[in-house]
Amino acid sequence: MRYTLILFVFAFIFSCDVKAQTDFVDAYVITNSYDTIQGEIFYTGDLTLTNSCKFKPHSKEVITEYQPGEIRGFYLSNNKYFTTRKISSEKNAKLLFLEVLIKGDINILKLNTPVKTRYFIESNRDGLTEIPYDESIIYNQNHSYLSTSKRHYGILTHYTTKVPSLARIIRNIHEPTEKKLVNLIENYHRLLYPSQQHITFKKQKAEINAYIEVFGGIPFYNSDFETSLKRGNYGATVHISTSRINKKVYLKTGLVSYYLNKANTDTESPAYKVKVPLQVEYLPRKGMIKPRFAYGFNFYEPLPNITALNVGITSKLYRSVGLSINTETEFKNQMLVLPKKLFSFNTSIGLLFKIK
Image 1: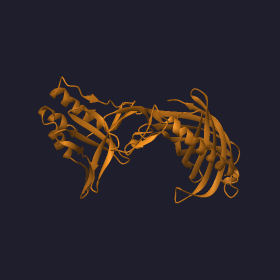
Image 2: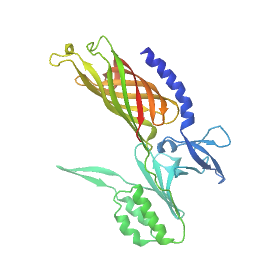
Image 3: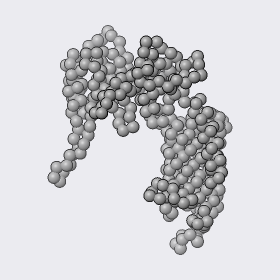
Image 4: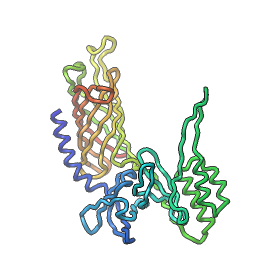
């Protein structure tokens, strides 16, 4: 446990410097006086840009954090454009950064939230209106059915009233999605203003990152638990992340061996068995030396499920290959997820291969 703490402190201190250097993308901000400033914006996923943006101009090393209203908006080099809008709720109105999907006589905007994605339509004539959509299950005696809201039909029809022929397309939008809304407003501009230009911020495919790690290590089990578990272990894990959530947060799973001695059970012979990790991992994408943290579960068979804390570092060896050093501390659980008692401590070394 002492070695885990030492490695955790080292990885945390180093991660502060890595984080400050590797998560900026080329961008520019638009000031309230319509000036543009070239630079870089801190970007780890769309959800992080709703309430603020951290901007570093090319001419300075100072990072400025802008709140909605302090600037008109900002543009990222991956073809994402965000603008400040006031969004009303039942309790209050709040300025937020909304992503602009299409800009013209009618705009379609998107608000990214952890719960759901909300869409808005906007024009100079009618202002900004949310395009609502909800689903609910209705129970009627012994039957149940899915009920969907219909308010979006009337809102979309009202905003596109200059082009009545779009009514058929609107009737087919049973659920407002980004693709359907952008397609509708593109048709609106093409039919009403064939000579005028509108801007569609084409949605890029979500960036998927994936690694495979192979490793071997030595476990040390608490003498109070499973003292018959011994010998080294080895395994392979897969790590997957997406830019839609956070480019540095990975889902980790795979197969890891452990040795079960006959003394542990009356029915089984000594043999290697496998445990399956299912963990959430933090792993920066760039840098020669990168810290890594993971927390989640290890599913043993036939032992109970175990909570696991991983701390380690990776070092780049060659292009898409890295060296990994990792420590894992396992705990028996209390109330399913809370660590209760120390179960094992494991150190391992392996290779990390980038596959996507």
